[in-house]
Image (tube, rainbow, N blue to C red; front, side):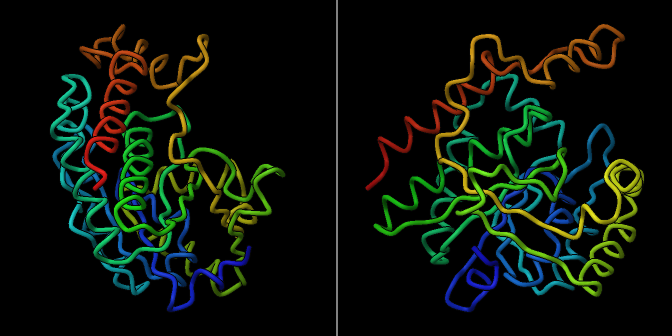
Length: 267
């Protein structure tokens, strides 16, 4: 499926990401689709320094707009929400995002993939699925749901998904704009340089938006332990973390609460 079909004026898009800067992975799609962009956190990490301004600059240059949820929480706050299972906060986000998708007549949503790498990324994916489902039921029309990789190679997509995926191939000018945007994002320069060394420039000349089920990740395998748990245990051992956010103890109950909300509030 060619991106041009979705970039047309009749197709309205939304981008939903956990952290500012994720838009860099789909920079050319951002330029073409000009989506409404929702960002859960301000990207402050362990610091108090928001990186929203850098993302706002990119959105302005691409012609995209910010949505009602835009750097709503410092990263520390979203971790607390997960650790303390603050369901009402999460359910209010489901409602707000679903309402925005309906009101703005969004045709498809693009967002972070469920990679088991970062808790906020995965929480964002659960949120997208529930909000898309709720918006579909209320609007009585289909809304496409797509993800993109943040830690994997950006130019790879499983064969079985390709027929229904959106592939964006970047020309020389587009790749140069994308790399310039990445190099001009000071808070992420270290990560950008690391990704370039790991994958090479060519890997970023293709963007894949992969179709994803709304209910993805609700039934993990018994022996599945995401990277963020393993990393969290190590950080706790050396004293960097006091608590570890876990899939079954923290994220899955929040995801299930989202789906219970969808079932109870679909009309």
